[in-house]
Length: 260
Image (cartoon, rainbow, N blue to C red):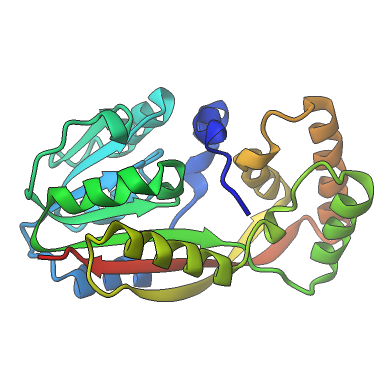
């Protein structure tokens, strides 16, 4: 299963919709605890999007430099973080940023690092970390459910719109773990890697569910009329099941200390 990095900038098409994504407090708390970042520590975030994860660290008082390629996403992130003077949003590609060597205590990336070739991102992340500094990269992963509404939507993808990837089947946790473990190892820049999976539940209305779909990069660049027709059918399924569903969400966190 490959990554089409040409879709990296498609998130600009639906920048405003990404603000409804959040990560569980337990994940954020574990990053802070396990990384050993001091109270006055400095964080670099790679690919902050609209600042969904950024805010969680800003609220805890950390100084944070967040780099975001998308102009609209960076603007939204700056607006969302305007109450936190220790947060700086930089609108540029991480690859083009001239790094400051060994100045950060923690480097984070939330659902973003896969858009940058690992032979660039992992060594560069390591170079900016102080001795004893930590990388914390995390991704949301799809969770399939046996709920009737989910099975009916899966059938829509399979039988009426096979050109579209079902987000709930786009990859497995096992695949992600193997890829990220290999990326860390290939960089030769980090020590042992740990990973932890988190689960939580979201209550989604039909509108919220469809907005989530509109942020899915693998649905971009395909015939818009066909996409909207599929979304209309999905909306009908959700309305048939009451217009609000409970969806299990999950994320996997990978952490490693920079090699000294």
